[in-house]
Amino acid sequence: MRFAQPLFDANAASGSFGDLPDWDLTDLYPAPEAPEVARDLAAVRDEVAAFEARYKGNLASLSAGELLACVESYERIDITAGRLMSYAGLRYYQNTMDSERAKFMADMQDQITTHTTPLVFFSLEFNRLEDAHLDRLLGENAALARYRPVFERMRAMRPHQLSDELETFLHDSSVVGSSAWNKLFDETMAGLMFDVAGEPEALNLEATLNLLSDTDRAKREAAARALAVVFDKNIKLFARVHNTLAKDLEISNRWRKMPTPQTGRHLSNHVEPEVVEALRNAVVTAYPKLSHRYYRLKAKWMGLDRLQVWDRNAPLPTEAPKLVGWAEAQKTVLDAYSAFDPRMADLAHPFFTKGWIDAGVKPGKAPGAFAHPTVTTVHPYVMLNYLGKPRDVMTLAHELGHGVHQVLAAGQGEMLSSTPLTLAETASVFGEMLTFRKLLDAAKTPAERKILLAGKVEDMINTVVRQIAFYDFECKLHAARAEGELTPDDINALWMSVQAESLGDAFDFMDGYETFWAYIPHFVHSPFYVYAYAFGDGLVNALYAVYAAGLPEFQEKYFDMLKAGGSKHHKELLAPFGLDASDPKFWDKGLSMIAGFIDELEAMEG
Image 1 (cartoon, one colour):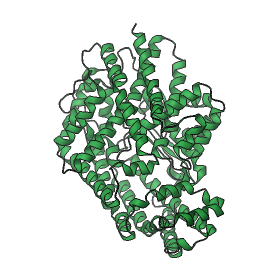
Image 2 (cartoon, one colour):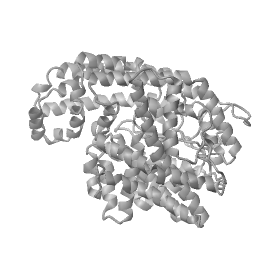
Image 3 (cartoon, helix red, strand yellow):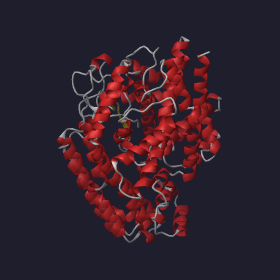
Image 4 (cartoon, helix red, strand yellow):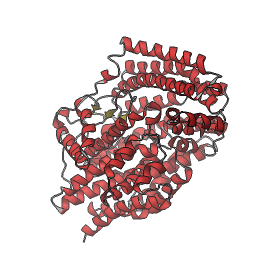
């Protein structure tokens, strides 16, 4: 999943890039009104009722075989409900401004929530099983023992679970709680329009962010100032969304006796807090040799004493504007995948031919890019906003990496396929690295190599430095909200404190930049998600170094890691490569790769 990155001119006709593919969602359902939708909704309702009648109050008395049947029944319900919600969600993201699609998704969410409320008992009652009893059952049945990683993740929540009645209430009320605020944020962002000086008509968020990477500095400045004007007009609403969601999380954490606001995310990621802290500290310590040093170089290349915020994603002066057609983008990525292992290209190919990618920029379409796994009995779908920039090719490589990972992990089944966020970015970032290295090897001149290296360094800074700064911002925001309501100015000040620290002394910050926290969707949708990007990038840099060093049977070990999905802990997954993310020095390896690229760029200056 990628942030809404600055892309290309959204007014450009898609014809410039060739025919861009649209999703074919019929692999999920033929249409919203199709009888299969009603059939599956009824199946969820009926199967949940039967599950509750059969198993509620009885888990402790089940034999190993009976508990296996129970888990498999739960998994089947999960697949049907997930298929319905995937269909509703993907249709909505194609056009968030379409009221019919929004209603269909909201109605589906309401019905699925209502139908699945009786399932709440399962994890609560399961977590009350005695350890010795559960261990005995797992020892008796190998098929049941396969689910041990799922059970361990469930039981990690034991100290934090509430009464059955309270858990049921929280499940029921979720549709008018955080998810409602999420929807308000999405719909507000999708509806914002920006009057950019010099543009013939108002632009949406995606197109305006896009201009921040324009070759014309005046256009970049005009876009930044237009963003600041509109964010400021809406800042009270965005502050209300953040205040409410942070308070909602604080209340939940207090009741659940979570020691920190981040604990829930670490538990769901199956990662130890000290590992995340080691990552965060390593990156912050490296700011001077990474972002601070690179942006001083960039200022020199641009002939500027100081960079402004609208220069951060500017193309280099020597960089000729280049449009990459869709066919060329497809070939570039598939060739890079195939050079690593033909199986990887084979797995990616159906995305292009079977309607698994939605690539064009369209009115109302959600910004950014993602790969949605749907359910293990169907296949993933990739969303892009493709506008022909070289970085869009990297985004394609990234999302296809997710897609390949999701296809391979599907063999684990619904409950074991889902990879924790910390490892979910591995295949995507590795796919990007393969594509980048292929392009770098093909560079014909030092100037071309410099452009590629600088672009990769900027992407890595956005993925590692910027995301850890975002994580620090969230940590500060949630800590401050625990002390009381935050004004927009309070939040603005927290934002600026991490921006100055992470970007360094090459930057001046315009008036209005203090509101730019407002458009980052991850703060709203997935608190503390952002460190997963830095985790993934650091992990892949270390992994790629092992690959480049010629570890025997690397490809087989890599495919085994992706196929494992969520069935193994990160220690187990990385052990075949001789890597250990809990070692603080592990992160320095990945950061050294970025520093090495900057070393090479400095050397080019002579």
